[in-house]
Image (cartoon, rainbow, N blue to C red; front, side):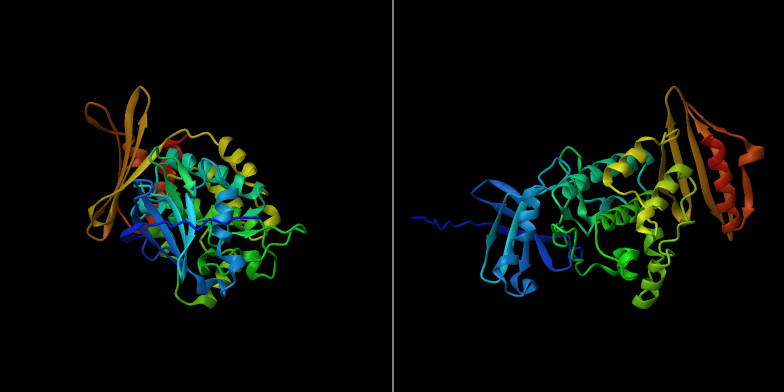
Length: 351
């Protein structure tokens, strides 16, 4: 005879966090008196499951099955009269979305985060799940700053026949094959990984500026590979990294990387000659900086001057020295001319 114990689990909400980042849930920072810990609790309305008990804990089960250093762990799942609650560690370091809101990540950080997220996705795929919601707000950083894949609310199991039911996805994250009548697969996660890296190397403002409110227009652009603009990158992004991102974003899913491991291998083969960091300047300008072992730092500045733009290049050790004035410095440029000149400057500096 089986005996079922009924346990009481309590937590005290402090405040809502991640406002606007979840489609069908609310996340709270909470105190757990049983564990004596601060946790994050995701509350999901049962109505979202059509009141079918079988589906209530599907997200919790997926998180539990895919335990990995690069996947957010679940501590426990419990039930309220109207909600399912998932308790997870609270990570004060926030998400990737927090880090790219006003500037791109440093190139070395892009590669570190990409490798971590791809390791998490490889584990998720190995346990026969597709995540379907790979985006900056769903990449959290542990207390040791390890990137981890979070939020399995959209994840779906891969059936024995290989069929995956595609959930209702955010409009901008729809893989082109879904719009073009294709099926769901792990290649949807590869596509979304391409979107994530596009946002990380360029900063989220470039990505968001391409979003239009008309869903029909957005779907057409996604289906044709025109969103996001694959030709448009910040000038410091190396050609090899641009190619990796474009490959992940291929409209034809058969031409993408066919696994998270294959994409990781491509990133590992990419030499990073110069690690550029980017800082916005007042008036819309930008400063790029790269530290070099045993050598002076490289600095490139784009600054406004009335309606015109100036590009200046320096090295900086004990003092600031102009670098390559004849080739690298320009004044009184239009915005488009400045962008074209910056592309040439970075190509020379990264040789």
